Length: 348
Image (cartoon, rainbow, N blue to C red; front, side, top):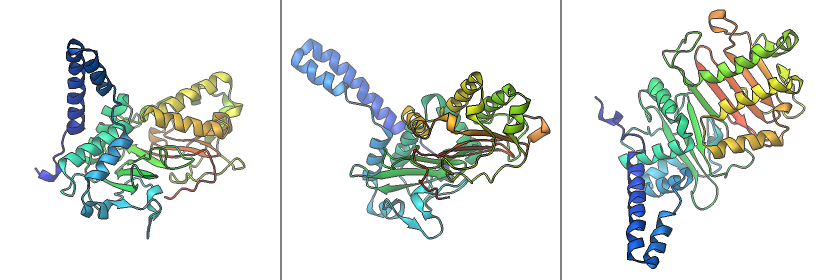
């Protein structure tokens, strides 16, 4: 086995230390109650300190870097790359934002554990296991063929942490990136059992999103299906905002019945399910500012219907500054671009 592929189990170092500190604090409160009220107040205050957030862990990670590491993976907020433009906002299905692989010798074991803790804080606890399944299926392990970069200086103004790899682009910005959800455009995907998946996409952690969307399609009447079903899908990475005056494929959500719109709300919940609550809330707030789901169109595409079973593998939910493009053939690719202002530009 190649030693560089051995990875510390998920968040073991920071989580172990945090739990140890928490346990010690709780025990300290009990002991202090016996010692007297003055000691009890001090111990209770220590125990009440907030748990670390992804943003606070990004700051710790930055402070752990040597000057040589900062030179390779830390950039100015508006750093531009010759081939990719504004590097902070670039997104791609399969890429490394810097040349230093996360599981390589460039990072220490503690730094890799911090990265894991940051990422786990960005993913909802309920989705954590599924996220790591995708990483294992697509790359062998979390951190293989993956890289990170930091833009700006955490704790002193705007900053953003970016994780990139196969079927993964995630961002943590502490609301530094104005007007956008998720810190900017993101990408997720999965090839669970190979490049070409079967019609029911066995083992694919993101296929349930398409199942939920197809439940809505089944609720449409004939006239609605004629509007919603489109012959050819746009290029999957075409997720620039079209604005309120834009022309969208599919059926306007405003033309759906109340129960159909209720089902679409369930689809939306499934789409944001993998992410922490604050990112879910920000995405929904951005959508509401541009008119909510009622300002969006929903489209399904006949193209690349795996198994020709009428369970549509490619579909898209799009509004003035909201694009969620789901391409499920030959395996799942999903491009996400959400903002509260349609003038925000995508760099892909």
